[in-house]
Length: 455
Ligand code: MV4
Image 1 (cartoon, rainbow, N blue to C red):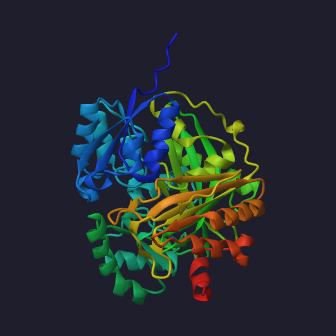
Image 2 (tube, helix red, strand yellow):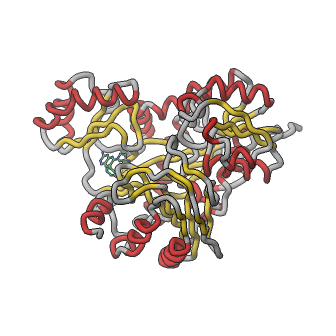
Image 3 (cartoon, helix red, strand yellow):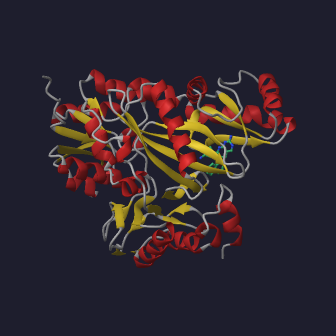
């Protein structure tokens, strides 16, 4: 008889903010002790107070602290942590970091190094999806080596096309062109921008889908080829490629389409022997409801709580469980989604100018009640720092129907008071009050159109 490997004794959380707290809470519930790492600027942050131990890993700038691999591995070494949870952002999709954790005999709580590599190269991910029979937008499955090849490929695909950085992702390094003239005038510049931003100037081309929805499938896989889909999240409401509000289920999916998209996501996972949690992003054409693979994110995502609320599954605990080498304890047939969840990202920003608004919080009221969840790290008198992401928390509601969830979110936003800094709370309220949103009838242009009417 084989004995199941035990979960971890001590986990180091290589992150800050709300996700660090989220992971610390999950570890506590599992009886695992925790190590926080923090920058000099984060000395007064809650993750430092809430963890069992804390190690300062460098100055305020992320590059010198939360992205400093040597510092973080040293912190894991001196505290004898046996695993590292990377959260999202920072080193979460850094294949080299995952590999080095392995070298140091520390479990990286996430997919394999090879999984991260395969999906991080967006053209390779497309080639794998194509070979696995996952629907793709017409386009190239390798980088276009020159402007001439780009022009030929664009002719074959048909304009409009979109240029995307092979090392990009999440909307960074993309450019739409409507004709050969525009392609000629922008190719070199866009490629140079990609080189500067990602250290890799390789570009690929896709057919541009004019009115898409961004719908992503949450997957969970173990080390024994067990793989399940936890349904979708609709993340269409974005501004400058920053997600603002996410919901599950998507108002545009029916059970048949959900099944097809889940099958496609799991086929991609099977093709790379995927392990741990992941998100397969699709564009869904709002007109004909065709869906197309875009990219795969090999990390836990900001918006994971909406999936947790509608499935009842704690994704962070399942990540830890799977990373420890345990077989999945949830079957596909256990996943029954009957309710609705919405998440509003609460940002310290001036919504008019879309500029960050760091500073001291001088008054705070956090909403609550049945079906209301707040994943945050702020407290009264906390100083929102200018060095990091402006997201100060996530407000998540869960209710039997979409309309109930909208009503609950509006109530919760009405209760949310943050004084001393500017936030996007009132902007979120306006989205929830809009007719198009309430009808679930929106596409990627919703916010631009909405903003032109707003005020
Ligand atoms: C696209 C697209 C249309 N056609 N790709 C890529 C990353 C994502 N954050 C934005 N991306 C898009 N890729 C093709 N082939 C349209 C977008 C897009 C978008 C997608 C989802 C939500 C909002 C968006 C806003 C602008 C463009």
